[in-house]
Length: 202
Image (cartoon, rainbow, N blue to C red; front, side):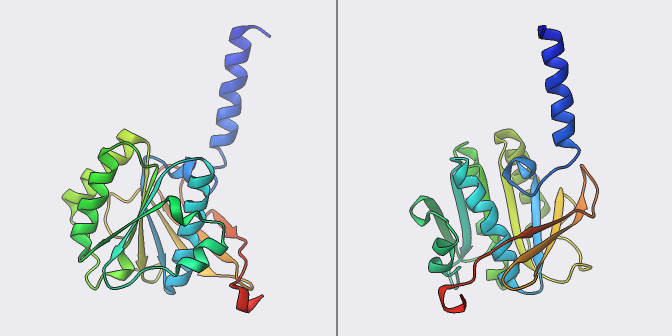
């Protein structure tokens, strides 16, 4: 096969892959993402699916949460997440969480930054901070994910969010993720995270 034909085949393959974006780090890289749920457990499940995917791709991950609450580490470990490789930052307010995320992204070392806004009493990120995070995500090909607790029809964190997804618990312990907004591909896609329940529920 000639170099021209090889290039054409690769481009056709790229278009084929691009026509059906999946729910993974590759499809979310370079973007601001919001995962909303009425039950915070659903958004945590969706987020940790991305954490696991990033770790399998050898991409460092930062999880930024409040000083008052955090995820339950044994559940994350039981789902396959390497806790020793997960950087956890705790800040007193959401604005400080955005500043911490920006500092980490500037290093170019992180492929994924999760901001658990559910853990803050006032979960708003100023537009200038969102602009900065969006630029850093694009520059370093990283995904920045906001976790929020709200209904699917509630307003997004901001207009700079490139993709918004709604998460809810499905059958058993599974998590269903629906893309509500996607500036690149349009809404409507669904993904199911097949999960194992905690040891006490199995």
